[in-house]
Image (tube, each protein chain N blue to C red):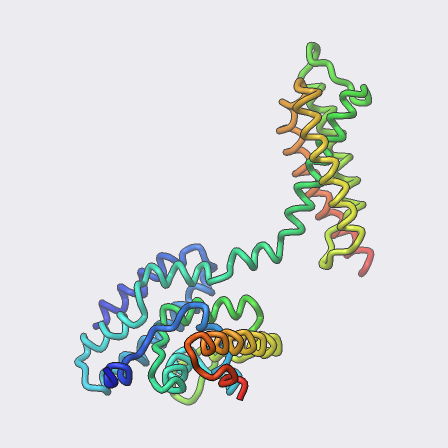
Length: 120
Length: 207
């Protein structure tokens, strides 16, 4: 039972993907591949970000002016589209973070955890 | 290996056919670049070439779905409505209001209406009056980036008038209801045309 929990990775819910993308980009600009790997790395390989969901989410964030994408060439590597978060994206991230903390707090209370675990 | 990848990309391309060619090429270039990195990573982890491609494509998901989602990213409808709802609403309200005024003008005898004499004369009169009314509405209610109190008042009045007009035209004056289609089309063309002319005139004056 314990080993199953330890090795399990879960696909992210579509609604959470933009928040995680914004959180990754808030730490610095990167391309799509790096965003996907960073989400997995930071979640300790618990979350698996499917690329089929990543790019539509990036397009939606671009359309909302939360991020911008620009083709960049580094050294001998082929050009890659690098995404950066905008001022409006930072605001959106703050809003989503607050909403997520409230949600997590409520779930935590329901399942019997500490209610103030997220605000600590 | 290449065949699988090319087939996958061409499936996505089919779904993106409606996008401008530059945007479509950008999408495909980005996905190809991402897939190539995944394949390299899989090969480095010990998979053979075919397995590495298959694993990468599986993780990307179905090509058709990805193409559709790229064409209409989440929230497309919401963004469209946020951007255009007021323009659509105001346009519909103004053209229906113009139609209503024409109906009442015919009823009160301000516009000649001779059903038994000349249908083309009747249609011409209606078109001219509708055109003038639409022009008036366009001038009084120019397109603005921000919604002003004036815009809201005009829209509110037009909507009330329109609802009353629709009700009355189909209850009190059923003989005129056949002309509603004509009024609507004429008002639509005239109103939009006048808005464009007005914008051009405003920009000429501003420069």
